[in-house]
Amino acid sequence: MPSRVYPARRKLIMHKLPFPDSQCHSCHYLRLSHNKRGSIFLQCRHPDLPKYLPQPMNCCTAFTPANDKSSAQDP
Ligand code: SF4
Image (cartoon, rainbow, N blue to C red):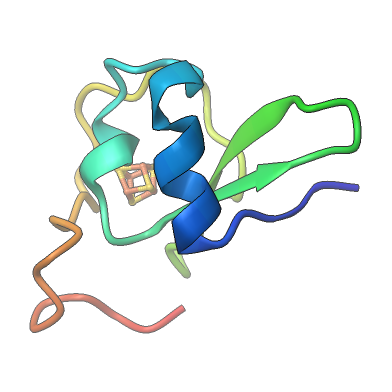
């Protein structure tokens, strides 16, 4: 079961994130998680989408810039 990756740790692992070209990396709804073996998962927290979508995501209609809190819906 993946566990949450906290912001400080996220900075440390940015260089080895999966699917670096994915639009999700700059989205408000992205949640990074990892398992005990070190695998990292991209999880979507958008309320209307499945948690795990095919990657890399290039054209998501629900994309919300990570720093745009005004238009984001809380998950
Ligand atoms: S809303 Fe779309 S772009 Fe944002 S994390 Fe979910 S799948 Fe990725």
